[in-house]
Image 1 (cartoon, rainbow, N blue to C red):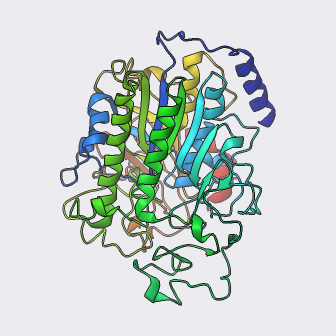
Image 2 (image 1 turned 30 degrees about the vertical axis):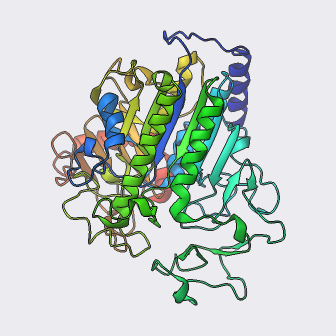
Image 3 (image 1 turned 60 degrees about the vertical axis):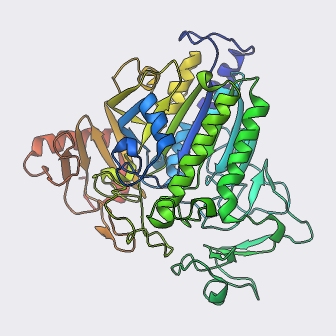
Length: 513
């Protein structure tokens, strides 16, 4: 795979030594490309997708004036795997390390792999990632007080301003182009996910410092009144203020756009909302009546509105292709006491789908999925199957560039609204378990494990029996047809095994003899 990726990258680079203002698809100029990637946003969290209790006017603007997909998928029901697939065009279950990573994990993407930013950079694009990363850094033993490499800049991004993992994990600092931002060298950072440092307060031993109660997993080092996963010492001047995080990332995004507007750019804007801890800026506290989860969605929507305004002010909106989606489905109770369940009211984050984050059922991976390009994409709704893993090959086709043997498919015409033909089938993944969608049908093969994540209040999709659903007739997956339609089940299973093969056999409790 490494050899193929290198060959593909060399051939792409050789074929694009100069930037061509026109491409074979008829676009007058190579468009700027922005990925707006939210975190734990559910299929039903946008009013454009049916929410009636929560207003998201700026996300709705993109959805209602662009192409809204009703069968758009993240590859996984958790964050790191979906982000890996988005950038590499490879299903995450093919990489056994593509799981939810701690803040100290090594870089997950091989620096020899083809990536979406590498491909675009070879065609004259400036590339940047701003916001959540969560794909690992370094080689597994990071010294946070020196330059950190490899990272985003070694897999195709010219500029990076990121948080290493998640808002609920240490280190709670920003990293700019491989260096901790605002670090005082006289106050070095130390990180340990197993043991606390002597004398350092935690949520458990210093509850008086805590402004947000957490479960045992999240009750370690306290930063800004919020206990985290893992232990951290030092780096006081570099530590973020959670309530300012949305503004911090937005300012970076706006500055990047205004300084790079004279060349085509690719911007991956990774939101932390509505992932826990949910810490809206005071401007948004009480904005929705749904507590912190609703308020940070309103905050994220406002940020998107400000992004759109910046593009308009710089005269870039008509030449910017925008993707809007989420890394996985919704979760309400995920480690902190913020009353997301109690204050939900009549709102359905899953939009009537079954399951949620961590789940093999539809709400785990079917997410809001929008493409917007003013004047190029006509307003429309598509029920075609499309996945974020397809973004790499689809965008490569804008330059007639070939990609190596990856899982990504070219569906550029679908994304631009020129056709309604999408994927024939798709593998869905949740915490190392997989399922199979083909047309209107979804097969969840037997998987060992609990049927319910009780601490999350979400069904896992696990079970000892086959599950077969016709989504055209049963979108909420209430009617298991596996026993009634054994021939259909067997045909789906064979097609599924032809793709996942030994990966499923090694994790299932079935015999294959």
